[in-house]
Length: 441
Ligand code: EPU
Image 1 (cartoon, helix red, strand yellow):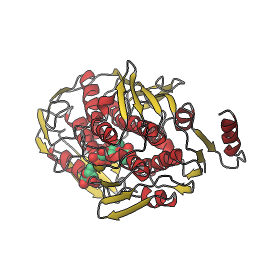
Image 2: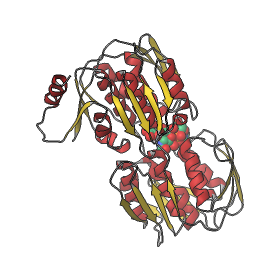
Image 3: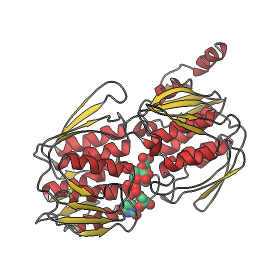
């Protein structure tokens, strides 16, 4: 299995082009099931999760073609001309929870779907009960059989009012995709307002859907009998944006993040400013600058958008580990999202967990260590921690990073990071590269 070796301790400077958002791309790809015309998605990130969902869609009968070489230049066409299969089996769905996003579109298009339950997940139990209640509200009969959800709307979906009992991102996306083809009007209350939900709603509008209230917690959808194809550009990845901004912060560097937007990370940028970072908008995006002295401790509580994103919690914890003072990080979205804590501790971090709060006493320097994590954001927090340490760190289980960070090593090494993927069986030692960098000053 591939690993990533990092020797940090140097300020990162340069430019990083932000890719299209993984969590926008996935529901947008599923929206292709709603029409028999092609859906072209531009700025589609080349990520393991995108290809995994691509194979679920191909299995269902969606013709998929990818093209483009460079970051930002990738695009794909998804053409669900038919016949479309209604069944997404366990082998495919188990690899990625977001495959449950085929459920709403399949019921809307075919009146029937059989989709494997996504099962457990490293960041908590993550049920899909609310997705199912939403579909029931629109007239779907739901049964659970041998780990499969069987959803049937014999007379088609009917518009209704449904209030999400908890804010759910993919839940909102699933029910929204079902409602656009339902007969009559649907009112969805307490919807997630994450930019990825908004991006999906805008794409659906360009496909002919009638949606009001986009970007607010109340969506009103007037069902239409069919949607048409379109060409749509995926919004920039706000989590990747926040992660690389933090790479500038933790190394005391200065990185211009291009093809993105500071407004996508409102609470994270405010928090980072309080920790000593500064931001400046530019024509292409914005510059994230680390503090000239040490980062300062912070108090952070994760919340649905526009609050502090749970998907940036692990990363900011890496910064808190080297900040001056005691930081408090409270995770309110997922019950088991502190798997990075023991790994950060291996690097010398001082972290105590009390309930859903991590208390971090900042230390001046982290040590290098072999580390591994069990989810995507936890893994990248270890990369950030490693970038701050002048010793060598080996991050194992790189496949987590490949799920959500396009060209991570290339983007970081373009800013001066000493980072290298060690392929299984490879003997090359990056300490040689580090020596060359040192010799070059
Ligand atoms: N929940 C339920 N029942 C449901 C659905 C959700 O109890 O039917 C609970 C969850 O267990 C959780 C809370 O509601 O406690 C919010 O979860 P949500 O449904 O919003 O999460 P999600 O839609 O499964 C998406 C992202 C996650 C991100 C969360 C929160 C995608 C594909 N995934 O997940 O992204 O953490 O929203 O913002 O959009 C990641 O990219 O690393 C990632 C995990």
